[in-house]
Structure formats: C-alpha cells, structure tokens
Amino acid sequence: MASKRVAVVGLGMAVAPHAQSLLDLGGRVEVVGCYSGNAERRDAFASRFALPVTDDLDAVFADDSIEALLLLTPPTSHLDLVQRAAAAGKHVLLEKPLEATPERSRAVVDVMERAGLTLAVMFQHRFRPVAQRLAAILAEGRLGRLLMASASIHWWRPDSYFAQAGRGMKARDGGGVLLTQGIHTLDLFVSLAGLPQEVSAYAVTSPLRRIDTEDIVSACARYPGGAIGAIEATTVAYPGLPETIVLAGEHGTARLASNHLLVSLKDGTTIEDGSADAGGGGGADPMAFSHEPHKALITDFLDAIDQRRPPVTTGREALKVHVLIDALLRAAECGRPTAVPQA
Image (cartoon, rainbow, N blue to C red; front, top):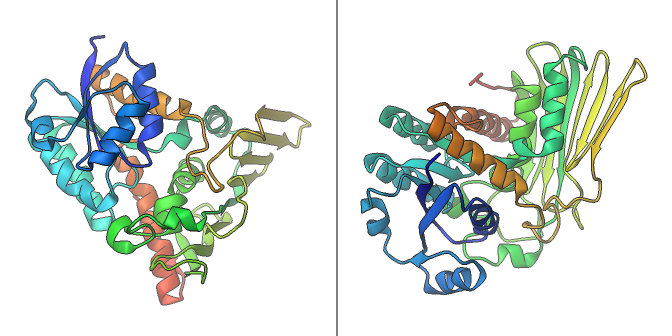
C-alpha cells in the first residue's frame, strides 16, 4: 500500500498521541505539515516531535497531494473545517466530539457522506485490546441476554485544567463532562450495550470551578430488551478513578475497568485480561495513557481508505453517543424520562 500524504490541523492538548502514532506509522504516512495559528504551539510541537509545522492553513487545503487530514481543533470549529476538507476532496480523521451540537454533528456526517469521502472519529477506547476482547465475548453470546448495564466515570480535573481559556464553557467546548471528558467511555458503552430507549437524569455544575457546563451527571436508563442501567460521570472525584463498565447478563457478568477486564460466567469460567495498573487519563493528567489505541484507530482509518470500506468509528457510529448525550441533558433539563432516538 502506498504511503499517504496527510496533514494535522490543531496542535493543542490532544495532539501528542496522534503525533506519536504518525511517527510510528512512518511507513504508511508522510506528514506534510502540522498546522496551528499559534506560534508558541508550533514551536512547542516542533521541539517535541520530528514533524514539519506550518502556519498556512489555506496551503494545506489547497495541496492536492494531501489525501487526508487529522482535525484536532475545538468542537465548534469542526463543521467549517470538515466542509473545507470535503470541498478539497480530503478524507478526515476527526478528534471527538463530532461537533458542539447534535444538529452540527449530523451536518458533519452528512457533508462527508455526500462527498463520498472517509470520515473516522477518534474514539480510541474501542481499540483497547480488553475492549475488543469484551466485544468478541458479547458477539459470541457468552453473557446471554443483557439484564443490567452501567457506566461509571469518576474522574478528577484540577484547577489548572480549567485555566485554559474557554475550557469547560459551552462557547468553546459545546458541553461538559459528557461531551468533553466522558464521551470516550460512553461511546464504548454504547458500542457494547447498545442505545437505551429511555433515560432519566440529573446534571449539575459543582461549586469547584467557574464553568457553565455540567461536571456531575447521574442517570438511569431503560433498554429495548428490558434491561435497565445507570450512568454516572463527573470530574470532581479526586484523585480520579478508572472508568468502569459493568454488563450483567443471564450467564454471567463482565467488568471493564479502564484497561482491565474480568468476566465471571455461571459455568465457572473466569476470563481476565489487561492490567489494573495501566493508566487511563482519569486523574489530574488527562493524557496519562498509551498512544497504542490511537495508532490502531489511525491504522484502521488508513486501511479503510485503501480498501474503500467504512472505518470502525464512522461518523454514523459516532452519532450514537451524541444521541445519548443529548437525551441525558434534555432529561436533566426537563426533569422527566426522555426517549432516546435509535440512531
């Protein structure tokens, strides 16, 4: 397979695992340029990674040799950049979330589909080996019919995290703990358990920081097959705990805590995989995790382009977690059970 010429747009906090992955994949990709409009960010990036930087975004879009873009900018910029990418005929790997609102998120997906171009979204938790093993166990039907499903995201973010201009504000991030921090775990949760049909929720902003988005959410869910579940997400739980997904079925229970999987079946079988000590980014350092799942997702994105097939984390797949998050926030606002559209 020929090497793909790619460019990176956005050199903020999310760039490090992308950049390291691109360096590891040097035989598959040629990085033409890494763009930021901020000179300090360009200098800091260049001093850390042996990749070219640029301050000319127009030149990136105008370069016909660039086949794909990694867009790592704030959510509210995604739709405009994706529209430019589609007009320029470039495939896109988009840092989560799709966009800041459900409507703009759907527009991102529609734009790329109309252009016939590949869109993948960076939901790398699906590429963790323990998550893939649990997905295979579920696909084999070893847990049986789902009875209960829960996702717990008890994370911590210090004052320094929110010191960045706009962090935690709707105008910049589009949302709080659900859309900005918990979305990776929630996407994995949806990929494993499916979308609930109805949710009830509370969502509040703690007194710890001056933000206008939620940083504590507690919710319950009802599934089409009769299962019920719970979702908790926060960034006020010092010092930060591993995010946990529990699925209880007719034949046993699976517990996925960050990078550690434990499955206990009624026939006496126990399946254990991964490490309880592996970092997950739930504490003060949100980037304290391995870049290997990023690399696996980028590889799948490149393979999808070469093989003319959908990537694992398509835009349509990504819309599912956006549907869930929107329903949780609407339920919290109205104080009533709220239907979850089945994406």
